[in-house]
Image 1 (spheres, rainbow, N blue to C red):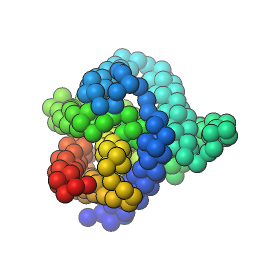
Image 2: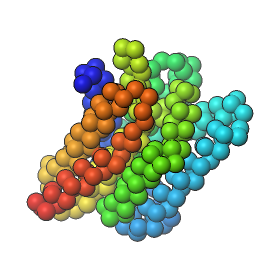
Image 3: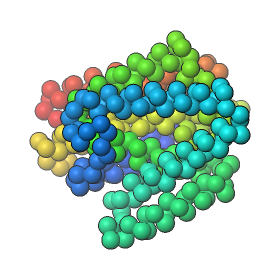
Image 4: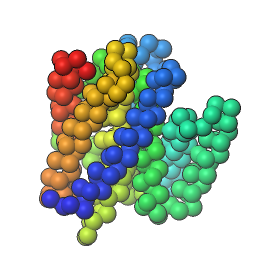
Length: 278
């Protein structure tokens, strides 16, 4: 086991998930969520709509990689990254900035975007923006979907991840096209002789599931018991991620989908904690 790689993975995971849970808890308490297809977080149509949106967006990126000139793809994907950093920074700062001083969150988002552009090759800054992007996206998705729609969403997404990596292999093409652009859609984990890249989706989806569970648990349990199930779900998600990354590190050049194994472990633990009253 590559201890340096795993240590980086654990640190990035903990920073993302702890921040994301804090933000998610705030969003739940304030009733803040995004409207997907409709305003009912317990409607499965919302999770299906989100899944379809991801498929369509993935197809759009693949079309750009295959048909667009490299300069055009670079401009468009960089623009998407900038918008993602800006929007998620504001979401992440909501619990820490008074509502009447929200302009400070906008200013911080602008500064972070500027730094990301100026210091484009700085891996530490890229990981910071990746943490913020994943924490903001995961917390907002989790606060916007009830547990049942979230279950449908993560199962569909994990099945798609498996097919896209092992069958159609288009996710491998997408990953190669994005990672070489040094974007905040992946975490950089440099080790001796090789730099591993981990997609933010492997952090966003467990966080979204945990925040969704937290929202349901808060309606029935008192502090700190409503954190039990989300914390355990995230813990086994980390175990699944460590297993996948460790296996991939021994198979240089081989892409492996982390999400299917993560989702299996999360569903098992969620079912156990649910049966135990959490």
